[in-house]
Image (cartoon, rainbow, N blue to C red):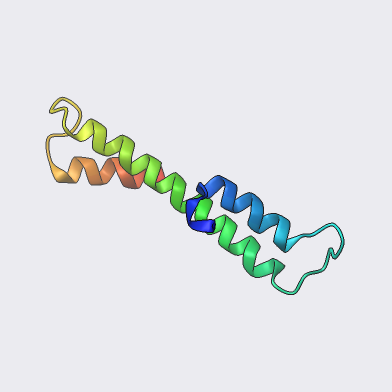
Length: 77
């Protein structure tokens, strides 16, 4: 069931499970909240990597692997 969800849908379900309206103080809320933050962070990194990789094939943008690495590191700051 969960494996068919997008990450965004999974995050919504996890948040609802961590913070149910009928029991606002659940045992694993902190853990689930941390997982949500990490998933969002990783998704952002992947989008930046994909964007940089799509530019990498253009010789005018990056001439060396180091140029690509600098671009990726700059975007993560």
